[in-house]
Amino acid sequence: MCAAIAALQESDPLRRERLAISSGAVADTAARHARDVDAEARLPVEAIAALREHNLLAAVAPRDLGGPGLRVQELAAVGRKIARACGSTAMVWAMHQGQLACLCRHHGDTPALLELARTAVARQWLIASVTSEPAGGGDIRTSAADVVASPDGSGTVTLAKDATTVSYGAAADLLQVTARRNSEAAANEQVLVAVLRDQAALVQRGTWAPLGMRGTSSPGFRLSATVPEEQILGDPFADIAGATMVPLTHTLWAAVWLGLAGEAVSRAVKVSRRRAAGSRNGDATRSALGEARWRLASLDALLADMTVRTQELLDEGVQPTVGQSVRTNALKVAASESALEIAYLSLRVCGMAGYSEEGPFSVARIIRDLSSAPIMINNSRLLDTTAQLMLMERQRDW
Image (tube, rainbow, N blue to C red; front, side, top):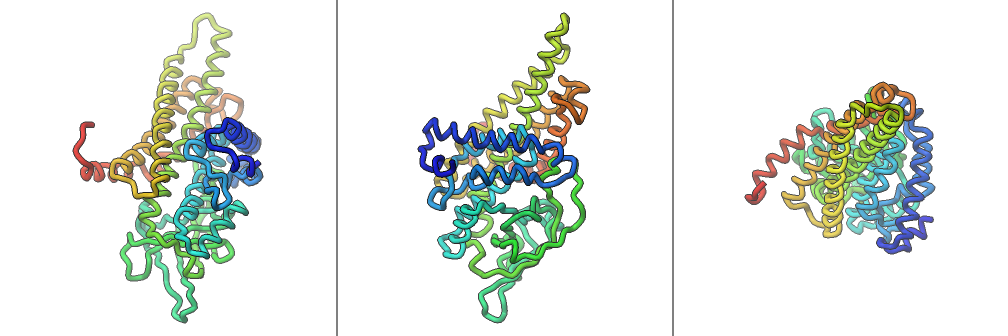
């Protein structure tokens, strides 16, 4: 199936049909295990295996590296479909796509990194991000950890990092770690280091018992590693984050949140239909359902616009303009806040059937999963950054 997808033109209806079948199969697997994944706060290993089976872990990888080369619009559609079955599975997939894109787009034609990228695509490695630190306050653009060159001239470097959260880190085949370029570098002079799992020593810090997105399995880890110097990506991390990681991950996160919100509304509609069929007085919660629908439509339109803008940015391979950065931040904030509002409106419609953790109309897990959205890169930080960017942007009518 993956070879057939790669051979089709992006406008070919057969490509879209095959992609829908593949993502639907993954969603079916994810749905069967979603409740257990949430209850045990465990990684959705069955769904990840299904993603590998259907070549969707390599979804963002370009064809010249052996991947399907899906466009952003297609990636967003996949994320939405999987999210409706299991938010944790969809979020793991979305975060991984952002990391794979960084490796595929910023290997700099370094032979070792190019081979690493090809292997990651061929074997569909799961790639985790190690960016957070206790002193960073959620700011991934600064690091306390640094890269230390080996004094014996062996061409290796060592790094040690105390990371507050590492999503699916224990199961990752490759970890991409931010650190200062050297011990004299400023906190924002960062590089991204590709670390194979067998090159790293990981010690978990604390337990993982969150409110929602429990299947992302994101405890903190203390990481130490020694790797060849060639595994440091050539571009500064600021350039990698600006041109690839931030715009793509924020767009795919928004797709996941929209998928969750859409599932909540779908369940609310089903409840309303059941009530309407058995009552002469109508549904007193109908206004909440109407509000949820217009909010969902607004978020859908915002995401559709940003998938096009993000694809254009990736195609150009340049750093985003100030205006593009403002829009990317706005998408993340709007999607994370609106999706949660939509889920709460759906809860009002569903009533106790939605409040229960069990049953076909439950929206409890959806609300818990979406509660993580505003604090995944905290919205307050993004709003502060956006305000600063707006002062730099050319004067315009708002």
